[in-house]
Image (cartoon, rainbow, N blue to C red):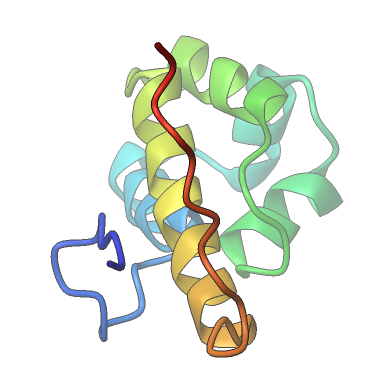
Length: 104
């Protein structure tokens, strides 16, 4: 039995940087000012916005404080994407499930 946790398992979840890009554009504040508010380098911000890097727990906490969306929201979005990518990469066909005996 395979557990599917994604609503649409064949559709790649959006990178959190895509949503953050939309938030940044809506803020009408420079990316430099946002990077400073987050306490990160411009390069670090651009790497997330350009979808080169994911959202770490540290970045999620920073985004929660500056952008307002919860850290859990950012991490869940990243986790959905990471899980989807792993399911594309990892070949589980040759793996066998271990059956455990119930404890008495």
